[in-house]
Length: 212
Image (tube, rainbow, N blue to C red; front, side, top):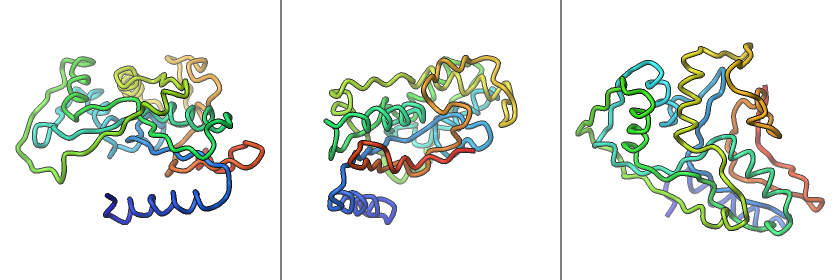
């Protein structure tokens, strides 16, 4: 059950949207990770771990990294918003949007596979909770496919960190066709992309995406 203001506000948002008499699609997101060339959120675990991996650093696993996480790439989130909004069969539905369920330790071990110079250190530090996971069975039942697996995304973020890619530089390594149909190169950050509302013509009117 929701306790903190952050989560209780989302519960209330869902109620408000349901009572709005509009067509809508609600996406409940996992932890959204991904590279942004000038403002990557380092407090997101996969983003932090990929940065440490690019620096041959040490990843500390508090309480042994037992915490559970549901994870999803920022690019898959944008794809889900677009694809689900364009299909009227999804009207007034709620979907969990998460491609991977993993423990913190499992994500760290993937980073170790990517770069064996990374050191993993388990600590006995306490953690506030063991986290949670969400099921993506419903969104997969629509035919939606996640195209940005965790390991591949971690590898890509590590390489970009190594290259020191910044906002005003081109990206020589990755073809833009990989992100065809997405605002790649312009997407800065999906901010509270929790609710996607669609009007009567099935056009998204609330994408909650910020561009630079």
